[in-house]
Image (cartoon, rainbow, N blue to C red; front, side, top):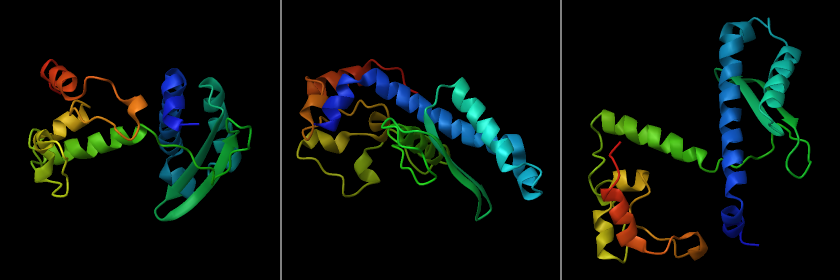
Length: 182
């Protein structure tokens, strides 16, 4: 089975999974903020307190399973899994989870920090910063960082054509021109 074909058929499930992944991230941050570094350092918060907090958030947000790691400095204070995977396997601290499209947010955040610091120009060609970036199509040299971040570069996916919108460059280029800049 082609994973990308399956992803295309189940788009709403994927969006739901991404939303749940985001919730996992925010639950982890909330745990840290809720209990705070000092509370963890003083052992005022027990593992049972954390368990109750996480399980309540999982129930409220219909999260079937998640893995949490709480650190203080370079020390892991708690690493534990909760719930089950889609295959009904119990989640452990070592259960791998797909990051999927969540990485786009982190990448965009880092790129925008670089742009704010004046270290990169969003409208400069990507090749200025990634010297090894080369496409067989001569138009590839004009692809900008902004276009990549907005998914309007016109780069088609020949490895997974079932995930590519027909129309290629012209359609994407037109969409870019009609899009309001960030």
